[in-house]
Length: 450
Image (cartoon, rainbow, N blue to C red; front, side, top):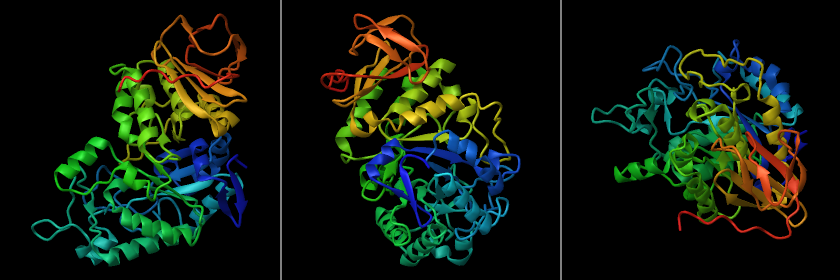
């Protein structure tokens, strides 16, 4: 059983919502997870996934896919044809129940994607309730995002639509689900999400709500056009976790080396100031909509350093299937494109990072960013024992000054000992994490934003 959870009546019970900052979520696209591409193949892989230290698995949409205006041969799983059914290519409702049961036995919760901004053009709702959609000048369902030609958008001014979708949430919650990841949650009224969360709570009061909050630039652009979009701050009225897209573009530039890493660290402190005290962000280096970190970073070692930094960061940590195999290319969402698993070469690296998410210093301490150059130094501080880290995100070599006490330490990530002498230490090839004692909270690095 994983650290955060106890089981009661087949449901995952969490002690404290703030502990979501220490959880690990694993994203699965059932179609491309295996040659079989079905629930049973996922069930067979659950022990390996659990061994990585995963707390939740998140399944990308499990519903039937529309056929009209499909992208690619098989279409996007986000162009949903029927919210109340299972994609027959994946299995049956009973197969899905067995997947949830198997995950629970291993101590993992299960989340599914909720795609309530839009449906496929030939969905059950588009055929039976065309008036529940935004309509164009000819009275046909339409989309406000031209590139999304395979979907049409729902109109939440209709109470009947909201009631229908709430019942869909209740149906899937009754299967024993532990959470919902809500696609483009920023484009759906928060008032609806409040209704949906209240309805799900009557079935499982511990269900976790994860919002795909969108990029800040897109929120601003939609508002300028008179279109609906919610900020992350508004979403926290309902959601337990929001995406990290509010600062993702600067992070990408920092990874590429075109933006001062210190500026990105400033934005992390900025998040601490503008969101609720116990806010939880989803930290990741890749997901199904982004480039793989192995393709984004200038070198493999820097990719690993950034992966370690985001696992160390304050927030839930997302692993996208294939990350443990150092995949360089994300699977095609519209075709059968199985992940090239190889030897799972980064499994031990990820397992160690996942275990450190549960370190007592992380649970009780405060995160302080100390330096950004020539390497990122940070610490989870408590008056008992601290979890310290050095991340070589810039791929530098040589010796650096550090605020950590002199001594010999075990690198909890690499497993080897290293020494700090006269407050000087060699920059690790990738990263090192270690326990140390500090008499007082060290000062945060000077912010570039001020």
